[in-house]
Image 1 (cartoon, rainbow, N blue to C red):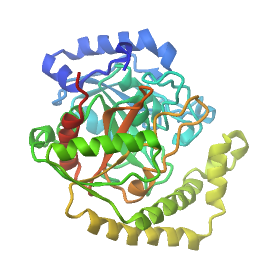
Image 2 (tube, rainbow, N blue to C red):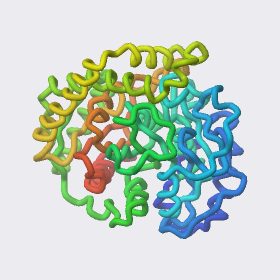
Image 3 (tube, rainbow, N blue to C red):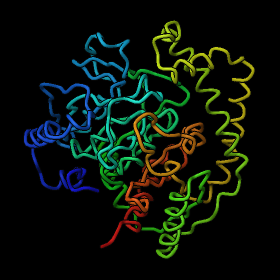
Image 4 (cartoon, rainbow, N blue to C red):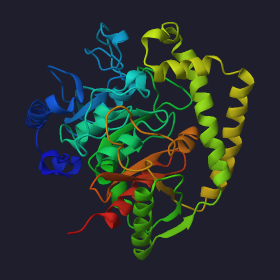
Length: 410
């Protein structure tokens, strides 16, 4: 990565004992220096307040579909241009404040957290999409504006931007924390996420968030992994193959995930339920579909025209497929998979395809994106580790081990 865009390590920040005032000064200076080019931020808090939690006032960005008291929630749409400031924090912001994070502002998102691109540029791959919908948060961490930033994922909205921007991410188990104060799209899938420079930083952040031991301290045992590559492109397949060789050489067990049928069923069911729920959650926007992007308008129209029996069939498919996936995963620590089809596509007209995250999001499973791989052209490629529900601590420990083994040398 260009030295101009070095992420800011949370672990190094905490070890340095930098105070909240100094950390805020550094964050603001970095934003002022580069955000005119990146457009990762919607608005900054003029007077962010540090807390006394274990993170000690670490600056954090908040995706602009998540309420932050005193600032408007504009959801990446002109329909919310005149939104009033939120009166209270979203529940997840409260949780992060209690952990010691200091929200410094709202980061850019796509329109209502769907596909229509926002203004953000990719600091790790200029001229290429940063992904969506949590693009501002991923870019803010990749550019070193903040050590942590919050996102949400309904299909691939956290994992894909992490892969494209070359940073780490954690998608939490669905319903791990309430979505109160978050503008919903599909309640069955909407999940919280967080970005950091590396998996070790995510582990430290998770420890503070849930008041548990640091998972990085338990990352000693070589894991048992299932490898699934889906329809990834040649550059991502090559990265997976290289990762497999290095992990096996370090002692990991890496077997192939052979039940492609169950993954196909989940991948097909996810967008049916997502569209059905989005049309009802965003009924007010459906009523003014002519002013929405074609991406979002089509999603809402599709969901509104989906018969109830198709929705119920998709839900039953996910339930039955989930049982089969749980059986397959039971002897393993995680699934190793591509975080995206390949490197970030050129141009800013598209945010990329979330297809490789859909099956796991359909099941509400936690996922960690491990950065570090590169395409032959030098673009970031993220690898995804998917764990069992409610297994974030174990998944982060596995992620720390994998990150250490795969860390670039030289």
